[in-house]
Amino acid sequence: MFLDEFHSAEADRICVTAEQASRFAREIAGDYNPIHDPCARRFCVPGDLLFSLVLAHYGLSQRMTFHFCGMVGDRVALRFVEDEAGGVSVVDDAGKQYLKVQREGWTIRDPATVETFTRRYVAFSGRNFPHYLKPLLEDKGVMFNPQRPLVIYDSMGFSLEDHDPCDLELDFAGAELDVKGKRGEAHLEFRMRCGERDVGTGSKKLVISGLQPYDADQMETFVTTFAQLKAANPCSA
Image (cartoon, rainbow, N blue to C red; front, top):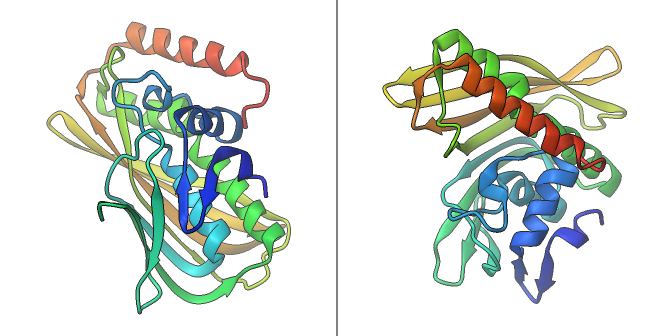
């Protein structure tokens, strides 16, 4: 399984090191959010890695919603706990919840299909910045603090219409940003296709903290640095 190198498993626990988390962010998602740096003061495991591990374990359900409840640190032992309704919680040994998943409808368990969906979504998700967020921020006249950018993955959900989505592709389908003082909520929409046929839709919500007035020069410097980091990693998605 392509996720094997990004976590370890023992009995009913999984564990992700800061180095594994950082490599997943860069090599699979092309995500250079500073909070995924192993040395970051507020380091956390990428939400997309938790998302990917849930799909690998439980399959791809017709309708799924993921709510991220907390930031997973380095080497935290995690368990998947399934409730009577088929929902899944990702918790640590103290019972703290980090991810809550709701599942409905049929489930696809074919490993190749699940991996294709996972890779397509994570590649889309990793393009948050600058591809989708920068135009939204510029339009609203705000930006995050370039010295301490804080963009948090809040939730995502999707609905599939096809039980056998062959040659699945995932496309950006629009975005909006709600600004409330120094806090913003970005909603990114996507659609899923098989060839010319639409087979599903979904959305992702991000929370941006510490908003300040937009500064084109500061943003351009930040984007240039981001692009240089990504160019230095030829394995990024």
